[in-house]
Image (cartoon, rainbow, N blue to C red):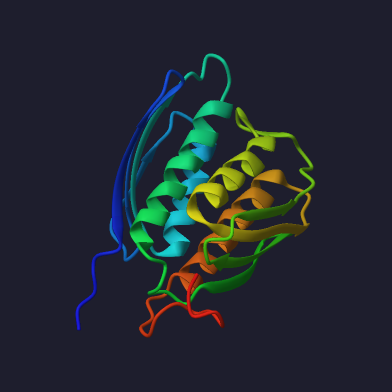
Length: 195
């Protein structure tokens, strides 16, 4: 039995941002341009380790700062995840990963079950990578969780280099998403019989 393609195409335009996003949960090219080099780097790691195809073009009011762009990309990606999953019945639901990058170690535990919640625990040794303020990483993941119906516990266990720690965070979230979104037949994984 063939299944529906797990993909979505989202456009989001506000007074602060203009975002075009195409997501395929089952793979494809990864092309990302947010106007923020380090954020592009993190999103590329996320999509690569999740096994996604992701095309993303975002323009935002970067003359103000990066907050609106980062948060709105998170909202748009979360919406695309929700649309790609439809009734949330065809995936494994849970995933977890522990990923090192040199001295840094990050952990993700995830439930893709329509229960939006974020626990985020990181101490950034340096507050900025390039021109990217690392406080925005939490804003991004909060937006993804809210719109995508994810429960995510994302923890930086250790690290002396913020670049390594942030990259490990996005890689481990990607690996956890790859597990949680693995296709599965037989209805939603739930003792209630529904999500």
